[in-house]
Image 1 (tube, rainbow, N blue to C red):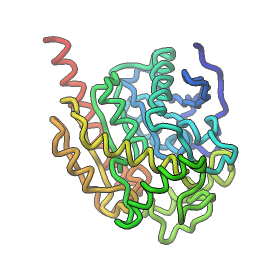
Image 2 (cartoon, rainbow, N blue to C red):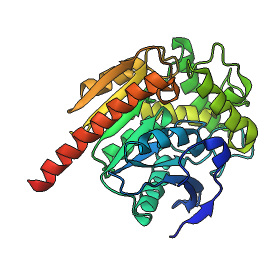
Image 3 (cartoon, helix red, strand yellow):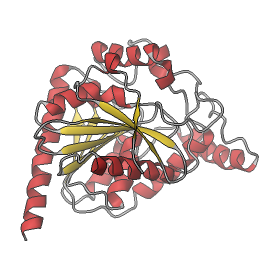
Length: 322
């Protein structure tokens, strides 16, 4: 299958002018959007896997920062969000039938990377929900030589009493055909588009907050509200699996904000403690979006990622020469 050109909102992306976006159709007939930021004589390519509610333009500034170190990058709009096909009649609700369906989107990302001849070695970075998708991809043999996870969704922060309720609602809603409904307390509105900077749970940097807000306000078709009951239950099941699966001896780092309040930091620490060649790092003065903090924090995080790239490439070279 070949790719077709897709829209890309360069005016709000503020990234490299080499950017291009493409449509790909998955094996089950869902159209996803994938962006590429190629670079002449790139040293390698980062496959970036965004979080829930996100879209490719959000990572264009990071593509610029990474490009300054001679790495190309790709990112994807997962099924049900961004400009990819929405899966429910109400496009405001984030939904997936099975969490493993996201791997069908990954297949198209890899196929496009090959079609565009994105330079190897490849690396993967998974943020939040993308950290769960990326971890399963690595477990299933994704062709990368290092893995970075930022605030990965390997556990979701839910009040103890609400956790059992979430499981109950997941099963009950499936039985009665209501799994497309929102969980209690969740909103149809997009968090960034409707929340003030003060007191937000994503970033301490107002410029980056305004960057994200401008994108969804100027292009509301990118915005997504709360998740469905089905999505929540499938996510809890996936987290349970990811915490028990054996991991490969691949260089990996997990970076989490000191003020993380969305995903479970302890689960990250436990997962990385069993990862050969893996390490766990707390980023001071940062919230959930460590790639969307102020310049000093972003520079620190980027350097840790680049150091990992070097380690992964060195290990890959040793393996190939052996």
